Length: 87
Image (tube, rainbow, N blue to C red; front, side, top):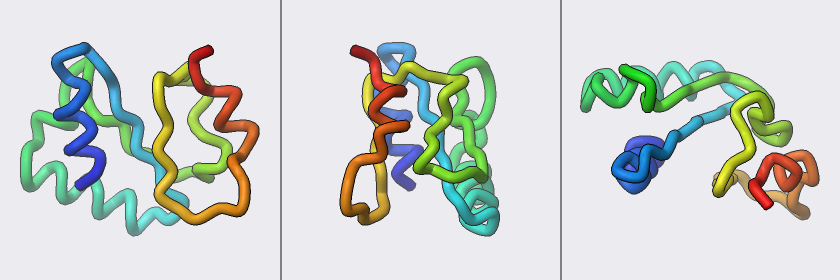
């Protein structure tokens, strides 16, 4: 749901959304929900990208990013994510 909302916020500015989860069943659910609701969100050059990976490491090959949303509780901000933000 959040990936679709963020996509709607940034699509007119040619923004991109990258959704990451550590658990494959959750990324599978994300893809299934997006496919059911609006498959267009997963198509084309501005498609939402979904991956199963450790979110604390981010997705550096697609950065730098304007913003990074972390949906998990943390005692501190992972420095690796900070380094992936635009200056």
